[in-house]
Image (cartoon, rainbow, N blue to C red; front, side):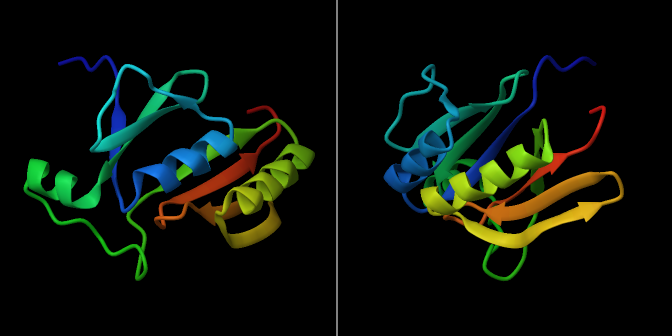
Length: 132
């Protein structure tokens, strides 16, 4: 079997808030998806898609319950940066857009990173790693 693409579907509480947050960070809206139940964004050069569904809709459609992100995380998305300075720029942009810095910037071996959550608690880190 061969898969052409992988994407993520995440639960959210507020479409407007999520749209504003990711637009402020400069992510591209996936305009092929228009709905009053979800907002979709493209991440990175390979256009990884994350669909953000209203939580009740996603639970109804998938017949699954989703984690309470106030008590734990289920996944961390990693975003690459081209320098330590860019990591610091990302941190300022996340703070300005209303994200929550969960881990202050720190050096890890040859790299440099920090962690954050979006307004719904979805976890990300921004990582600079030489040669990556």
